[in-house]
Amino acid sequence: MTEEQIHFQNPASVQAVFGSYDENLTALQREYQVIITGRGGDVTVAGEAEQTAKAVQALRMLCELADKGQPLTEQTVRYVISMLSDGESEALKELSNDGICITSGGKVVRPKTVGQKKYVDAIRKNTITLGIGPAGTGKTYLAVAMAVKAFKAHEIQKIILTRPAVEAGEKLGFLPGDLQNKVDPYLRPLYDALFDMFGAETFARLTEKNIIEVAPLAYMRGRTLDDAFIILDEAQNTTSEQIKMFLTRLGNSSKMVITGDITQIDLPEKRRSGLIEAMKILKNIDDIAIMRFTEKDVVRHKLVQDIIRAYENFYRNRT
Image (cartoon, rainbow, N blue to C red):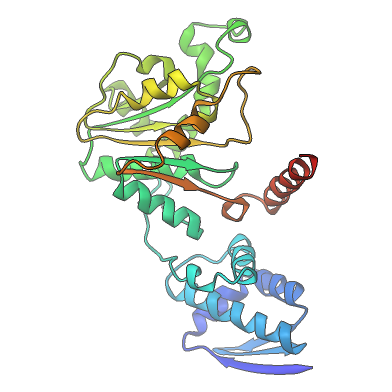
């Protein structure tokens, strides 16, 4: 049994690391099989030597993040444990308290993982950014947050969000209502993100003025999109022709973000995903960034990470 004592300058950071009702502390103790006690800025870790050293490293990193103002949730603790396990402690230091924007409910939107921070930085630096990765990594939500930030900073005059309606044939025809009613279910996740950022009243007003546009991908044909922040979501369900059409809509003083999960392609059999093709064609072009997320960047429930990992292992073993 080894015992190690650590002193932290800021007792409030230690409190943040322990979490509400010591939930983060419990997660750390369970992960490293150690006993952690603390009073003020003094923390004691007791356990097997190797595990104690790992727990101390995790505590120091979490305190460092807390000092930067990073909220420490159970998901953050899991993420730090995972990154340290893979020897990526230096990468964790890239995380900061920089907020992108504030939602209508007063919540600060900020990257929660290193992958998310690199994605946000890529959007900031490049005209076109492709965000590729599994569900729950914040690809669309962070892109919308960056669009809102650009709009409020008067960098662009319009926000355009679009998705392919992959069921635009027979199944869509059975839905009630006019064309807009039929495609609205496909666009609902985009509406939800905008509602969160602007609030329902502001969103309705900006939509009425055509400052915000949420529309199926087919509506983009024949247009030139100037002074706009354009987001193409679920791009894995585009054909080669559709994604080329979309990319060539880019106008002056505009940005584009294309998001997708190439493991969830809903196109009919024998139809190649335009996103997969675009990743190969565009990879060496300046001012275009291709960012890949992994299951580590999933910020939903822990089970989502486990599910993604299980499917990856299943398909890897089957081939």
